[in-house]
Length: 196
Image: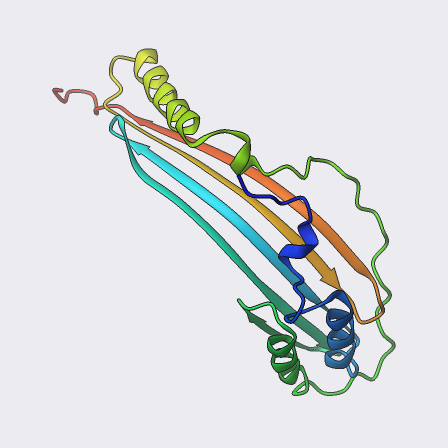
């Protein structure tokens, strides 16, 4: 089980990037823009594929990165990388210098309207590996028991847990933790007139 109790530590690390660095770099990169933001994300994901009565795939990955977007009039610049560091964000900020300088007033920050609709707990750690495989076996068995003509069952289970932080040049910061689980089942039967 992974300790995700300090979610911001997945985005900010001493020697790589601090929250103050992120704000300073965002202000520098967007100084000549009407709007824009720095988007930081960490994501852990897993997927299981169960086909023909057995586990065919089981994948797990962890990734992190950022996107930097600047808007100036009709122009939009975007740069991203899979390394969260002050140096990488500064390099990405150079891309936004290619935009024509803004002539209008800066866009206002978004309203704080986030409501906490779900838990911060990681669904990846909520259920053990073996139980996820058993669930897929049960789905396979239930689909086959429902109709004796079912010839093939494919079931998958995918989950992710991500941490997102958005930093704007005006000092607005939004932070969110996003758990997601997605099951899928596909059953097929032989066409009428075919022999099994």
